[in-house]
Image (cartoon, rainbow, N blue to C red; front, side, top):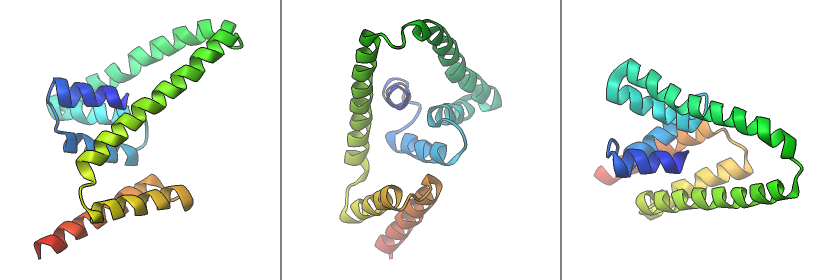
Length: 154
């Protein structure tokens, strides 16, 4: 969903800048629930207030819920079919490619200095090797970014 949100909100509709979407991803990561739904809710609220937030939340949830229910009813019968298994293997690889594409775009746009690369590396180490919560990593990275900007202005 994140690549679709990026394409729709930044490129097509131009409701957000790339940096704003990244900020919403960060906030969406810290709040309970699915990131894409949180981001859509924030954007809907920003565009049309509470009604917009409710409409975007329902717009994100209902189609997926209906489709997943229908697919689950059919897939249950064919779950162990080798062709269905092969298809899911391919789908997983495609999803990894989509995620890597987003990561590459975010890297190019945001990691533009040695200090930013250091914040990224420290965040990644905390996440992978010390199992620190994403909430604390976002707070750490935000504080480090503020400190970095403050030091460059002084």
